Length: 336
Image 1 (cartoon, one colour):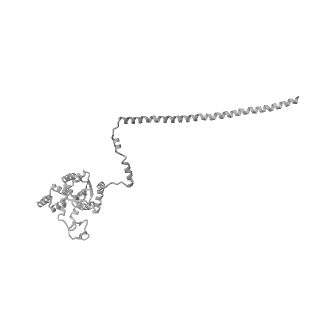
Image 2 (spheres, rainbow, N blue to C red):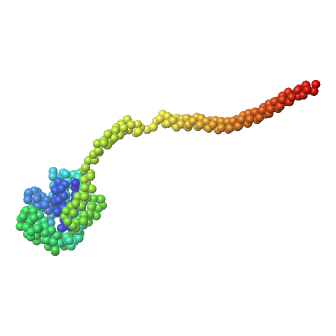
C-alpha cells in the first residue's frame, strides 16, 4: 500500500499515520523525521540540510525530494509506505510521481483530512506531548487522567511547544491554503483522492480510514481462492479450450468448408418436405375414412329393416290363403 496523507497542521495526520503504520506493517514517512534523521546520521543530504538550517534558510524542494526518494528505496518500504505531510505543493507532487514511476510503484491512494480551522487552532494550541514516550494529549479534547502525568509511561514531562500558539497556527493555515490545498484538485484528477472527516474521536476516524483502505487497496492484494466444491468445475471447463480448438477458431474459412456449410443448409429443407407430405396424407386418409364410414353404417341398417318388413307381410298372406283353401274343399264335399 502506497498512501499520502493530506491535511492542515493539527488535523491529526501524524496520529493516524502512526496507527496505520502499526496495523499495516509499513513505515510512516514524514519530511521532518527524514531530515532530522539525515542530520543525525551525517549523510550527504544531512550535511546540506544542517548547513541550510544554520543559515536560517528554507530547505529546497530538490533536497526534500531526494531525501524522500532515498527512504522510499529502502528495504523497509518495499511493502508500502504512508507519506505524512508530503508533498506540500504541486511541483513536489509531480516530482514524487516521476520518482515513483521510475521505481515502478505509483501512489495508490490519497487521504485528505477535512477539518474546520477553528477546531484546528484548538487542537494545536492545546497540544501536549510526553518527553519520554511521545504520547500526545490535548487540554481541550483529550486530557490525561492525572494532570501533568502521562497515562502510558507515568512521566511528568508533558510539555507544550512554544510555536503552538494561535498566531503561528493561523499563519500556517494561510500557507496551507495557498500551497497545499491545490493538491486536492491534482489528485482528484487522478481519481486517487478520498476525503476523511477528521472531527471526532481518534478511534472512530481510524476505523473510517481502515474501511476506505480495505475497500480501495486491500482487495487488490488478496488472492481469490475458489471453494473446494467449485474447483472441479473450473478445472473441467478450462481444458475444453485446447490449442487445437483455438487454432481452428483462428483459421480462415476455406472454399471446401464453405461448400460443406452450404450443402448442409440446402439439405435441411429437403429432409423436412417428406415429413410434411406424410403428415398431410395421414390427415387426408383420416378425413376420408370418417366421411365414408358414416353413410355406410346407416344405409344397410335401413335396407335390412325394410326387407324384413316386406318379407314378413307376404308370409302372413300365404298363411291366410292356405287356411281359406282348406276350408273351401270341405264345403264342396258337403254340397255333393
